[in-house]
Amino acid sequence: MARLEQSYAGEFRTASVTVQLTPSERAQLEQRAAEEGARLSAYMRDLCLRRSGAAGIVAGTRRNPEAKALMAELRAIGNNLNQLARHANTTEESPATRELRAILGTLKIAMARVIAL
Image (cartoon, rainbow, N blue to C red; front, side, top):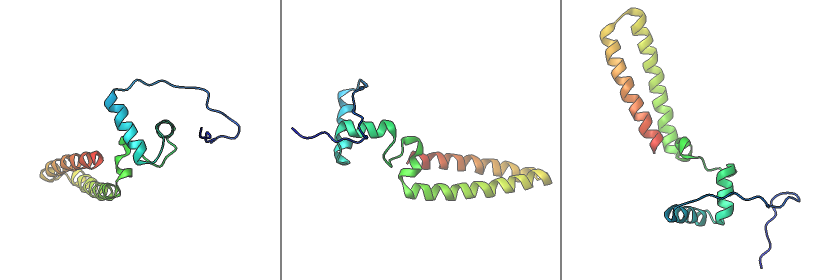
């Protein structure tokens, strides 16, 4: 029998948590654990306690460096548009304001797509 890995100083894992999964969900978790070279229990513990460097879906740009760079560019474009909109509002140039709002809407859609990468 293999020796248990002791990751805490003198503390044993005696408490358990039960989670109900579909067979396909379990297979997906087992596959991801195998890809990382970990046992399912260790992989789940890392996911739940966020010990590993992997980010969740909410932070999709952290997992993808290209998406992160693209998001930075889109953010800079958004800042420039905001400055132009502020100028248009102070000088009361209404035609430009409508165009800027349309561009801003397109920019928001692009940012949502980058986050979904």
